Length: 202
Image 1 (cartoon, rainbow, N blue to C red):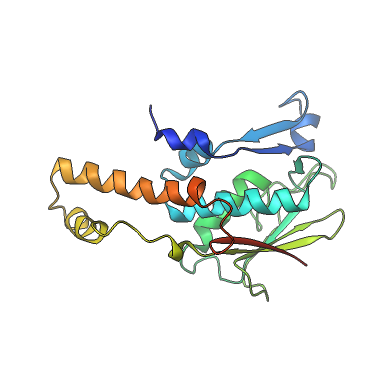
Image 2: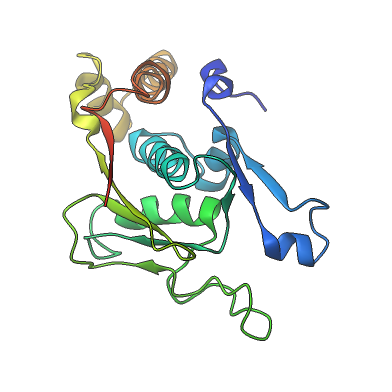
């Protein structure tokens, strides 16, 4: 199994999971996520999956500047409905990293370590997502605009051939390469571009 080389260039996300520690899953409770793991879970790499990963990375860095983010102690809100556009896809990626879920998550042990009801859709916010530390109530709004990173000019033509099943093997390969080139520009080349991804403390 091989992935594009740039996947390894994307910064990882380090978290502390008290539930994993308590259950003996991880000796020190530290769980580190890499973009490759998220791609395996999502089944693909695209500007949406990349953006969700980057939104989480930036938000958790802002909320936990001096220590790993604590899984299960982070609330995440979206202004869209779960079924609108790609909100559900973004929510799944963020859930994998933070542990937050809507109503389907872990109910806890005697009231401790609960993960359900930490993700909310249809919230009254103006950002793409809001992350909040439960222990301090500190929140950050995340704004993500992949539209400023345009696809290669040839992408539209190739996509038309791919989705109509008229593309050759060479064209399918080129389409995938150009697709991932855009993801690379989002995740590595523009990782600190505030016009694309911005964090606002509330």
